[in-house]
Image (tube, rainbow, N blue to C red; front, top):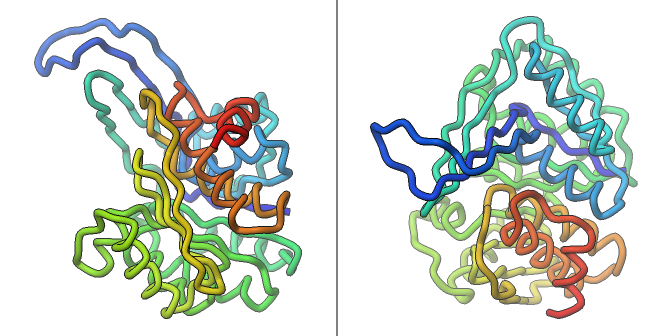
Length: 300
């Protein structure tokens, strides 16, 4: 089973405008309200690819209830923990000439609720994958991924981490099966700029030396670089096309990579599926469907 964790789920309110004009009252062309959060995005694309998974995390108030309802309608299985106060987030995404996003803070999560999640994770086994992705609320210490990895590593769970700076680096000592920084996040860790696949290889290998088994570096419309557990280097260009909505494309790449690895049992096809899923999401208004992913996969 694949489990994803989203500490800060959200409703994404996506507005499409011809042009965003600051200080003026404008009418949107289209509106979408969709469940969001990086782990939830991974679960959604895995579900679209018919890969069984369960989305873990927290929900609060009427917003949290709506997130869960929408996911149920999309056949995404959830096992969220209820918070007593506040509401889950509502984030605003504006698609105009450029993409603009306003992300809110989300509810407080107490230590007791953290312990409740950790207790759930103790039931995972060596046959399971655990995806830790995204930021955490300010009410949680930034060692939370490290705490989780320390628990599930004892059960030989395959850990996947898609996060920034300390959240990612602190998890490396637990030898995660896969990490997926983008080129900017990779550069931030080492205080450099990553422009080419050669740069990605150099600094991706440094993360391997720090403990990661496989390092997948997403590079936007350029493509993605992979250094696998044996040190083999791969690179795949993204398919051509107009980027419509890049929100969730990195999460889609994670989902595609896992789905591809489970299906084909090799890293070449896993990377191909990852790039196909990430690109399919970027080229459409919402997260990639199975048909969209395989249309790209079969033509790369």
